[in-house]
Length: 383
Image 1 (cartoon, rainbow, N blue to C red):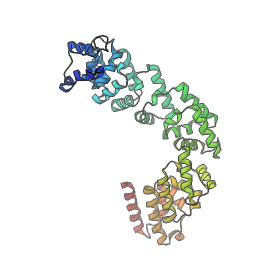
Image 2: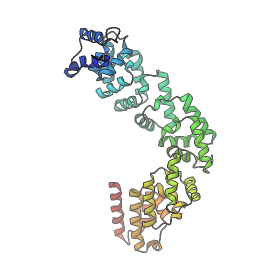
Image 3: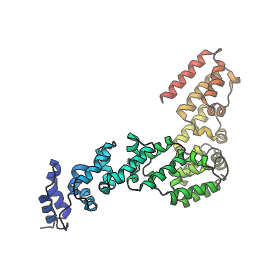
Image 4: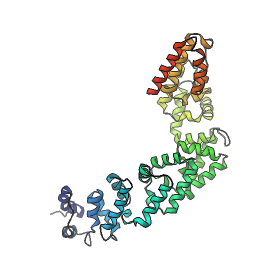
């Protein structure tokens, strides 16, 4: 007869109890341990607790219970779970937290958890914000209070406001898990050595805070890559070039170069466009082609014109280029502005300027233009 594995024996004994959602008596778990032959002592009651109270699978519960043998009664883990529930954590949250680190169930609520949650509250995290920041950055329960508070303060300074701090701490998994001393501060020094101001660093981090979390050597390589493409430290586009190159690897960069070559751009034109407006490379190849097709075929731009004005490729096709071009075609049909207009000027100007210069000055003579513009705005806002 083949020998059964201990995990199979445990599962076969525990399954009826899992289905019935009942607690396992100590005599039963002792029997299972003896049958399995691999558990040297009576299984700790926490295996039962983790299944029944935290929703862990049997296999994970047995493994996790090994780190919780110092817990002597349900009172200790109950106090932890009750604390989290009082702060808005539901059963799914608790299952994830315990799966990440079951040792949290051994924390002293008053000495460990309560001070951290008070500190988070003082920093502005309450209600759902508090739940989100802990679930996105569970290290707040592991690290000591001083480290957590100091990291949050560092990120607040980097991002420039409490609003952005809350947004990114809620949305970025493990953002607080990175070392300030080994990663963030060295990278800040590297960027400042390139002449990038704190203000410009903040602008980049508001777009993508993980930019500052790459390895310092990787950041230095990124700087060398930007220099090699002709974007020099001290230029107004250098920090944006670094951010774009961080997002766009060499393979994607080359694919976009080939896409623009398909419209007649030379490599020199492509690199010049990158130096003027690095952000045009952040879209997908298909999106870039769609915008170029529209600008060339519908808006009447020569490919070389777009290369000289690459900001056009950073604008939304549906919300900016199409509705404004539709309106400008109406102006052209009425021979306004001499029947011509500069696409770049019309497309990049702010909404208020567009309204004043292209709409309101013609309302008295052609009131239907105002209606046309209103319709184009409604269509844009509906997207």
